[in-house]
Image (cartoon, rainbow, N blue to C red; front, side):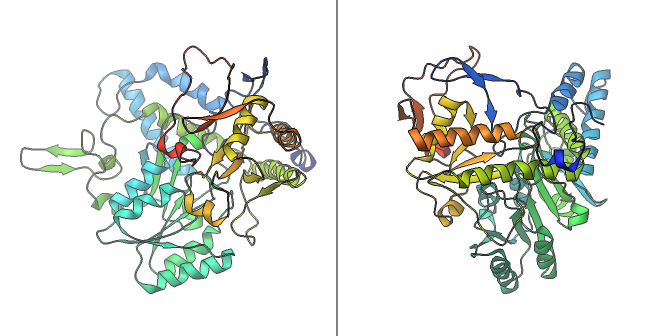
Length: 460
């Protein structure tokens, strides 16, 4: 058994996960609240960025002394680091269930991976996706002939609309999420793959939200490409991956041009390397890649049933509890889809989502996400208010106690309202005054990105 892994001894115990499946860095973190003192932090924002697993952080501490440039140095540490890098590629390939004809290209994150694939599409490629996608799986396809299919009230109806689009003209690629970053609903990928392949289209799955919650396999699912991020996979060190067939990757011009992507450079001609090196110019994020591979290894050792039961118990506890709070309603896309990962969006009537999130953070020590989650068309379709919604998301380090803290805090908000005063500062709801100290090494954030100022809830 993997160290720091907690596996319950019976099905009954699994139905009440009062302990984490895997230990994470920061699990014992205490943070200040505006009323004074401190409380244990409850992290329910995993869908944005998950904490590092303890085993991942330990692995980095082990390999860090050997860090050196990969594939170029003659020194011992360079040799060790080069081996670590390619071993990580093999580990990620195994985790993704890659086929012999697939390759792994390391990227910064899911957004980077999907932009890489868009760059590598054949000239004149036609791409189809749903309006329910994260912006990372919408915006990159603008450079192609991109057709956006509106989601119908049910998944069965939506699948028929997809089929109609696939039959109207040749499609090169169907781009779809594995699990919604807004609602957590898991798309029946097998149905999508069957439909797409029948019409000669390849399928890329935005795996950012499904891979951290479900065992995924390219070979078993028939999916052609999958993209995912380390920062959502308990390895927040700046690496992601695109995994899939190499033919489009080998035929495209390099995503980045520079050292490492070439075989030979001359005055009048450059010979480019094949994928994956073709698209990995420059010194790579070796430590991020090592962390990603270690997270893949650790998650790959979890019993899939234990994993699913743990998360399902948390989701049921949260959804059941939310239904008991007056004025709180949850959001979903398709009522005929039953499977969902650890992401639950909801609206609290009478409270701006940003204000509610600020209250949870400042008065209760709970981190959730608010806004439109970089899925503007979807939030509009779901009828969310202009401020968007709240989103609680959890994973292998989460427990029932985390869920109960959130439910208690929401009951307090609805019953009594915030006890502190809040104002919008640089587009963000902020306690005023805010007496909470911050570590000396981390200046207090005073500005937000345009995405957050637009109340998207960040990039996730």
